[in-house]
Image (cartoon, rainbow, N blue to C red):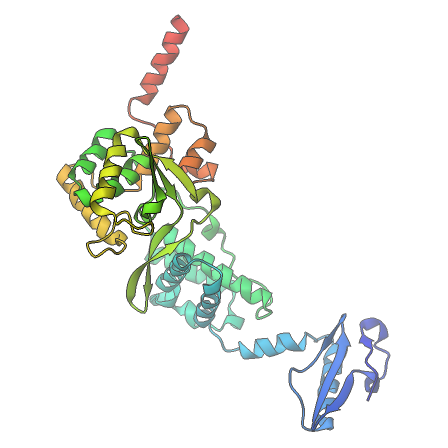
Length: 397
């Protein structure tokens, strides 16, 4: 058999017979050659020596014609040659299951389903295109169709675009396609954030007063302490520290509603970032509420849910939100106020008290300064007048 040598444009004058190596192991023949710094094989054995040598000859010819790509890449391309964009999206997301949170994967698959996999009309054509044949024109046509069909859903549209681009980037990395055809300038523009009007103190108190006793604590945590609903529902007895009449809650995770095989369940997950893991001092006004709630509704064990259902399980976020909506209606306040508005309220109040952005982030579990200032922070009604009055007093004083 021929001695294996590096084949490169610089030594292509070698005879064809000196290219690669064929050897017999047992009853089977194996072929291998070196090119561009590494060895290459067909990925399988041959029953006859002539077949192995013929494979080496075909590889030699590809190199001479400058049409060579690694055999492993060609095999992978052949395997995925008929895979459609829709099939590849599903395979791509399935592979992410071990690397991302269950709630994150659920969101990824949801937007891909809404805008690509289950889409109708012109937008729905994208999923049937072979991945290897996907062009930039196809992607632009899909994006135009999506924007026309869903003009008021910029966030979901853009999220679907990101999933498509990420899936194609993975395909490029695996050698399935040469370049990423998903590159739409308009899709990269950040959609305008809908500005939430900050509720005033009276509106939040009115909702809180209308809540049933079992859900008052969750409501107080969301509306007046900036805690997310999932974080409040995830609290266990060991996360509540009562000392000398003061109360601190330890945020160590959140529960998210995950749907599996058509069945919804609440899954406990760790915080998304280190900032989410934090201790939140409870306002003195609500300390008695926490202590009373623990006595009335929370079991004695460290792992008992602080706000359980009647059978001791974790409360679904949908159940809590339904209760919140009914209380909001009874309170007679704006119908756009959600539990999440409490984060806007607290961030604004903290900034008015002179807190730094870092301090605000530590209390709210938010480490992105731009999000704190651009998304959550608001100006309280009457605050500009109060500030100018303060400036005037300082000037005259």
